[in-house]
Length: 244
Image (cartoon, rainbow, N blue to C red; front, side):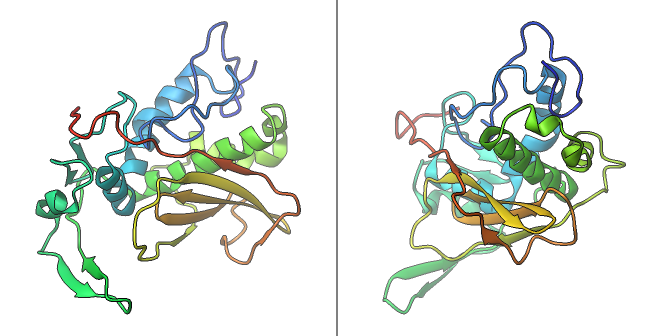
């Protein structure tokens, strides 16, 4: 079976490729075995997945919710956000650049405004490719591996796996509201918008939109009639005091 990224044969016994990286949260959403070869799968894990979880809004959500990673346990440190007590936001405050500002919302509930330390290992260009990688996986799951071998997807395939350089960057849109709580939700939706191939991804409290055709921006889309949604709920840790 050919790999949907490099188009080479995946070999006789390829590993498992997750649609939503296990670095994001432990999950069972996978592509058919052989859809992604081991070389590409390992490349994505080292180069892209690590930058995905280091993005500030994502790393904060992972640590606040204490979601299990690949090891099945919550992690102590991600992208400068250190977790001492799972689910206790006060335990994360020492990773902020300044003391959180506490205020009251219109409904009387308390709200905290925070600014994070800059993670020296985070690379924005890789984060952008990581978003497109997840989006490509989502389409592969909603369609099939054979569909992803069409020339229609070559531009995205090349950008995700074989960029012209580390600085090559495609655009994405993001909306991160100020929720009363951070939802344990990771999901993807494919949209229809003319020549564009838009994928909307909810990663905890943040919404991201990418265009897998890179036609000039991900705005102005509408839901496709009868469109399918790919959901993957983030699990709670097995024990509230587990460590990794």
